[in-house]
Amino acid sequence: MSWKTQANAIWRICYFYGFLALRRAPLLFIAIFLTPLSFLFFLYVVAPHSALPFGVVGGILFSALFTGNGMMNDCAYLRLERQLQQVFITSPLRPMSWVLGMALGELAWTIPALALFIFVLSLIVSLSPIAVLGLIGVVLLTWLLATSLGFLISTFFRQLREIWPIGTVVFTSLSVLPPIFYSLAAVPERVRWAAFLAPSTFASQLADRVAGLPVTAVPAIPALSSVPFEVIGMVALTILFTLMAMRLARWREP
Amino acid sequence: MEALVSRALSKTYRGSRGTVRALDAVDMSIAKGRLFAFLGRNGAGKTTFIKIATALLLPTSGTVELFGVDVVDHAREVREQIAIVPQEGKPFYHLTPREHIVEYLRVRGATGESAKNRAQEVLQGMGLVQYQDIPAMVLSGGLQQRTLVAMVLATEAPFLFLDEPTLGMDPFARRQVWEVIRRAARKGSTVLLTTHYLDEAEQLSEELSVIEGGHVLYQGTAEALKSKVHLEIRLQFEGGFTTQELASYGQVFTEHGRVTLLTTRGRVPELTQRALERKTAINVGPVTLEEAFLTLVGRTIEDEDAEAAP
Image (cartoon, rainbow over all chains, first blue to last red; front, side, top):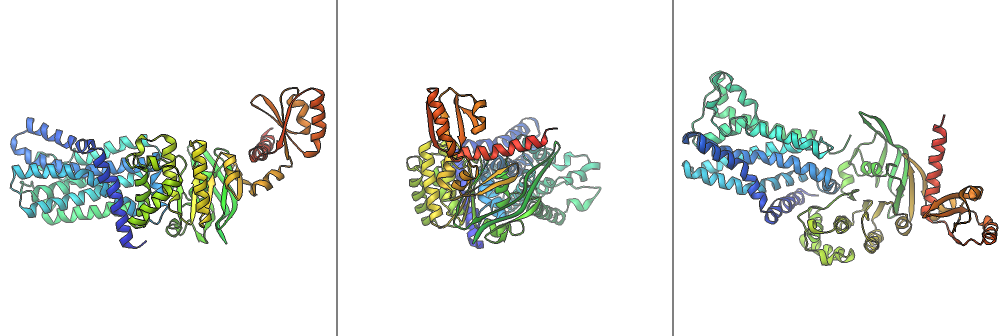
């Protein structure tokens, strides 16, 4: 199959697994933005209003990160319960085209939530078109990183029941604990560097910057809070996770 | 030309509860364009073989070649030539049967127009036309299975692996699927089919293989298998005889409360005479593939049990 045909196949998978599913089960749309919206509502009630923009940016990144959770559960479900992954990869379709199609399908489900949060952000801070493009760039990197991780994890399980708690642990650790919904300034100065152990912190710092929100310094390692480090860190981590998914994912049972 | 050749193919599963040898030095070959049935009890090794041959599972040792290409070393090339109905696979819950076929064909590289035309043809052949626009989630289990099979058969891939494709289907639907499988074979596809319906294997296959405990016990035609067991006649007794007194005549088993004896042609007159003396009705007929299969596998199990006994 040529690259053009592979690209068309990727689009078809995204269309029938993402857009068509969303059209036929609109509840998916609500389910996806309900959690970040709940966090946002909680922040709105208990935190000072200056924290609200961080919460909205958090909602954007949470939605992008949770595509990884969806990817993990869906890929495991389609492989273990429906055996459809086997049907699709025993064909001229390249296995990585299947993964990319599925990942784009997950992104398709998230588009309404992302649009909503970006719209809300534009109401509370002044967002230029360049800033919106910047946010979209951060979202795409975050989506690629999260879905690569989600797919990679999914290939190591033989039972669906085993995978659900893993998803909760991994993606909650990536999206709620690090400074996604709150500013890095809330983390004690001495341990602020530790937040960068989570790849999502890079995304959060970049997204805060792009949205024009104040970015907190890391006194222990000042370079951590510099733009080049954040950009290089985010891109490098995305490439690393993507390569890991390509190289380490189990396409064949051992 | 051979479409599939396996040489000394072995697979051992290792787990916390020990090791299981699922395939043990399996040598098998399937000629191009052949409709081939793979028979065996649950856990005999059929699905393991298919998973290895479709590059979904790595063998422990041995090789499998598909159209002369090694499955382990050249998985990508092999995958371009195949399509599989996995055992107990299910379709997407939100897609209709028509969408399943069209989208799968398009993902495999077909154009929109040809995918739609082919889908219509297969939906017709599989008796799915009246369900073509109903999402799979509201279809019955049998119709869902038919959808999955239709999606794969529509590809007319050079090699079709069908792992229990008619599981859960009614007899009418099974016959429709058989016809579509035959059509694919007529157009040149090689088909490897596993099934527990022995009538299906007999109806469809040009050649078959029987596997038990990871060993291939037999490869050849259904007719040759029946003659291999050396018991060509089936006698069913409506009472009047015990299994013990018939044991010396051949293979005896009880089915639906009736004593069934598989025996040779030469013993029939004597047994008929004895049945007449006892005023017992008997049914006489040729041994079926199912009975030949049971006899072949049953003997192997008995031999293994005898060897394992202290």
